[in-house]
Image (cartoon, rainbow, N blue to C red):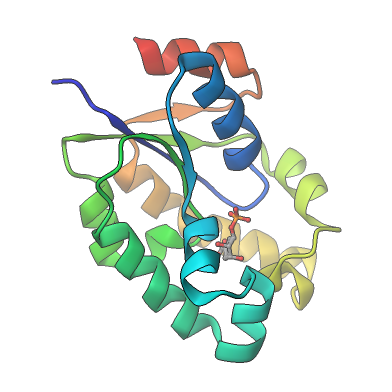
Length: 161
Ligand code: S3P
């Protein structure tokens, strides 16, 4: 079966956007980012949505957008999308290819620690690690494949295969 929706999942800072865009270019596929779709729908950026409307509202829109998703290409998701069981069920559908980007915690930590993300801003490193660990079983549950590296070429090859 040709899987034409390729979802990239993984914690904040694993490179879903960076790698997703480049791999889509390389494979001549459309590229989408669920966070951007949320921003377009709400007409606020992610940080403003968390601040002004709260995380539950963000999660509600994230869920609506994912469950209606029907466009093919490479689709980056937000790190927390797998916390919702409906989202996990949707992603796990056999018509999707789900790739878990999973570099080491050390790499992830260094990429997010000074980033301006709503869930990073008020958490200590220990709390972030706890969140990271708590999500691992969910990423595992949804993923068809796992990629631990950071090479565009290697990820594109994995998808082609
Ligand atoms: C979130 C990750 C963010 C964004 C939001 C919540 C999360 O996306 O969806 O800030 O819960 O991990 P990235 O994974 O692209 O940073």
